[in-house]
Image (tube, rainbow, N blue to C red; front, side, top):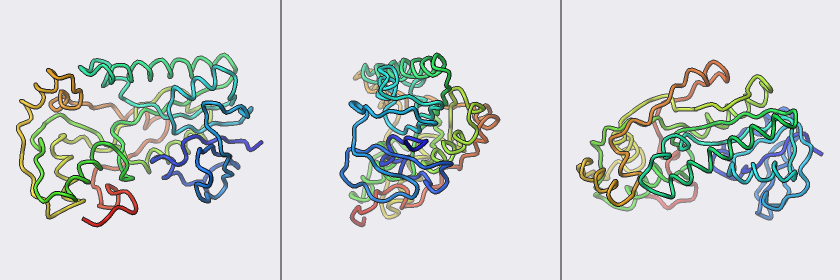
Length: 280
């Protein structure tokens, strides 16, 4: 049994993981028949939902859904001394959303975090939970890369580029690197850590930079953000309702514990467009 199990290696953060830097051989689960070679990793075709060959492992590195991981641990299908898993600051930012689905997501994350930490503590192990803010860098996110995709298709794009609510986008490469760092720190990395990006900037400025990087020829038509935010509150759209809200977190605790030193938001086109996408 390899010492490390990796979940979600084909996702946007898993794609950024330098598997040559893993401290030990690993096995990775995938529903795909052949995801392609990754140094130091052997693939196992399986779904965590019904995976039964779960350990004990020295470590589990999870980039997949946290509630599925919590269920596997709770049911005894997965056992590990150290669990390093992605959660999200959505646990905090969406708990009061006007969107019932976002509130449910926040509740699931909170429940899964408590379950993972509690199960690990009772088994004599420990857990590191990584809560990134808005993730970008692989062209696969649902915010800046989606806007970049629109800009590449349309010569004129209407966006709320004056929206002042600050965001701290965090790069997939920084998340993958800090996950490896948590593995190396072992019990010293225990706990849940908010992971903001290296720059706090207005939502509208984040959109402008995304369009400029992905499709410089696209013209942006400013949309007034206040009516959109009011509309979002009325219609139950959390994303619109938060246009004027600062979603900002303190990087100090993660810096002190994990050496967290993320980059700012200065995207290149390749970081906002999925590989293989047609040219603009």
